[in-house]
Amino acid sequence: MDQTALNIQQQIELYGEPLGETVRRVLGPLGLTQGGLAELIGLSAPMLSQLVSAQRVKIGNPAVMSRLRAASELADLVISNEILESDLPDAVHRIRATNGALTTSGPTTRPPAHGGNLVYATPPYATPPGLGAQPPGATGVNVASGTQSAWPTAAAMPPHDGAVPARTVVRAIQDLLREVASTDELQRAAAAIATESPSLAELLLAYGTGRTADALAHYEQHHG
Image 1 (tube, rainbow, N blue to C red):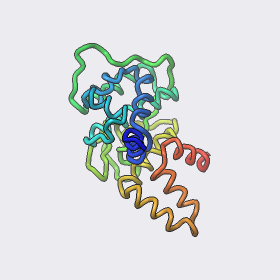
Image 2: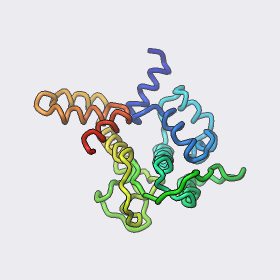
Image 3: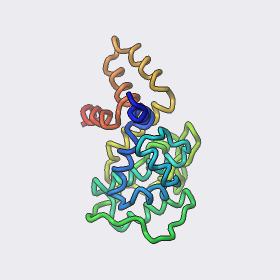
Image 4: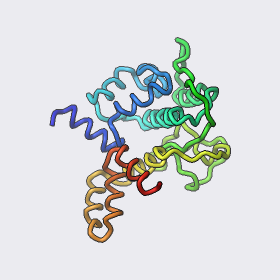
């Protein structure tokens, strides 16, 4: 296995998918160039390029990773037609505001070509609803690292009628498992319980060590 392939595998273990896939999924729906996304999340354009091409493995700053996750969740809402066209610029601005960056060359986003109802979702780096109440307007906090999320928690948002997207739920589970245990630990735990609890072992492997697409397929199979 060459170094790039090894780096991609490490990104999958850390984030559930290669960072290049995450970035490419975000750019179109939010109308961003790769440089625009780098500015949005508070990362240098050359550094983001190295991460996308898997020359580098890890985003070292948890706050930058949190903003990338928030941008990814917002892109999912655009793709699923769950955010109003008029709400997208403000949602992007909220993510940008958390890194203090200012755009001086004009807007970096374009509204989607479709409308819909705004649905507020909990990002993977925010405290899930019910795990610690927060006052209105409070932002989510990564319990393990203490970093602040760029996206408010569902508990801090107005009530809504829409369901939380499956990808949001899946990523929350992935992040939780990967923060409390390493890939090796999850694999050993799955092996230890495989005989008596094969379904639970499958769950640990799917969400703890697999790709996001595989975890999403597992979730839809058992949740649908």
